[in-house]
Length: 246
Ligand SMILES: C=C(O[C@@H]1C=C(C(=O)O)C=C[C@H]1O)C(=O)O
Image: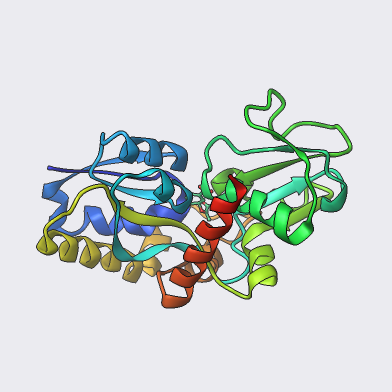
């Protein structure tokens, strides 16, 4: 059995559907985890493949990007934000999202190179997402952000901000293995992922819709699942900026 850890958020539902409706199902042991844990499991070799935050690729002694599908965006993604009580230029404390690796780092890259401000970073905030301090902001990703854009005074979509800064798309998570796998298995994996993406309209028939968030638009248009050359270029640039943070 090949062990796989994939992201437990709505944006991964098409991929999960594909893996569960393709013959590959019998060859894999699939777990669903928050992104930071997907990364941890792959780094600690508890799984062979992860849909992992691209930021964590830098922590892997050996890695192979094994798919041309990813969790990406071309402009606004609608589920990766800094929510703030004041304009970004005035933020004093930035709470990081414990479930994230990529977006926390993307926030740091943008703060340093785009907004050119240096707030104090708070990793395990007690009041995560609830601080009423006028100069506190927080990074948040995934389903927890759905419907929240009207609940905060200042809202920054980090994929949109990255595009304003670089003109490029962005990759949040990619399918990565920590060892070389057989080509025949990788082909099956990609066929299964494609099957899931091609089944999106069918998936919507059984999905509970929300009044406060357009799930169809999110999964059809905002999340961009293709790992294009433009996204690979963006990924290389993001990693370069990440290395410069250190
Ligand atoms: C767009 C998203 O991308 C996610 C963001 C990640 C991160 O910040 O580390 C990791 C996996 C992705 O699923 C999201 O889930 O909202």
